Figure 1: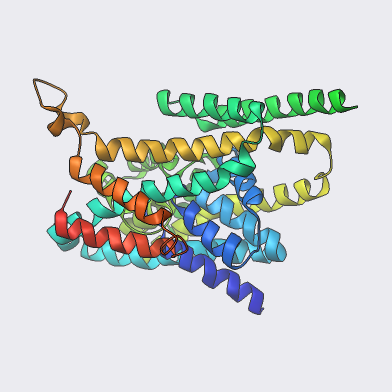
Figure 2: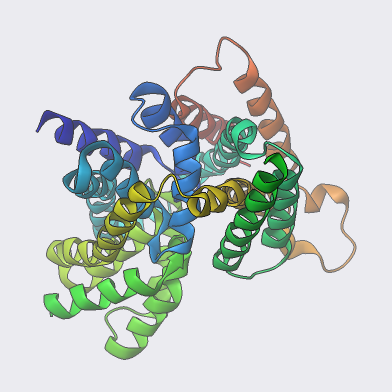
Amino acid sequence: MRALLDLFITFAKIGAITFGGGYAMLPILQREVVEKKQWVTNEDVMDYYAIGQTTPGIIAINTATFIGQKTKGTLGGVMATLGVVFPSLIIISVIAYFLNTISESELLRSAFSGIRVSVYILILQAVLKLWKTAVMDKVGLMIFTVVFSLAVLTSYSPVYFVIFAGVLGVMSFRLLNKAVK
Amino acid sequence: MLLTLYIEFFKTGLFAVGGGLATLPFLYDLSDRYGWFSYEQLADMIAISESTPGAIGVNMATYAGFSTAGVPGAIIATLGLVSPSIIIIIILAHVLERFKQSTLVQGAFYGLRPASTALIAAAGFNFMYHDLINTSVYSGLQSLMDVINIKALIFSVVLYVIMQHRLFKHLHPVVFIAFSALIGILFSF
């Protein structure tokens, strides 16, 4: 029970301080569930993001469900997800109620112009942390370069990239294993 | 009405693959079919959802639900959106746990990890590009200063350097977010 409450509170905290959606959640996830709580590893987080992008539903929710499930089973998955959406429910309901006064505030506009910078710098920092475990050899570097370029330059759904990388991974893994034997 | 709302957002959660903005086409479709909210309201929802804490898809569902049926609508729409994720991911997690040792799963992840990291990096790059480069002023003769948001560029470099310093390296990300908000208020990019 305590562990479930801990999951709910931790994910509510993550939901409340994530600006910019699922990808921007990564640095905060690393801090809270990898470094502080040590519920999952950086490798786990990468796997969840990869799966979260190919399965139905939005990435932030899929990742939260995964981590919750890994920590405390099915109920854990449910609690983590409820936790991460809880702040949105409150904040958005309040904003929707007072919309006009808020969207015209010059102060808030300026504040967000600063927050936007921190969002991508934090993502950059998070990617650098993943780099060591994600890109371990030439195959990894090649996949990273191809997927990054295609994702920036084209507007294809990430689903294709993830499937491509998965198939390539299976093939090269088999080849490498054979070479070792 | 609430049941319809739940079912419609359940469908959105089931068919939207990817980030929160992948739910957008489904919301336009809801606007067309039910008239629960207008296209203008949707534009506001996107702006608000992107600039408030939380997952963008969840924020949009909450907002759309609230516009349709108040607080109960907000709760029902959000629960509808997350239900398919919970079901699918929990089943998938059990399957993965069982086949963790198979070379098929290990090989797949061997390829997926760099791809996953690349997609996150690309998302970060897109955020940065749209923030630093003013794409609306391409027409006519402009100086480089008009195209690049110099103040934001300088601040992003400064922020990155600060983050690498050993005194600040271990601070919680929220500290940097709050600091950036303050800098934004002072210098307005």
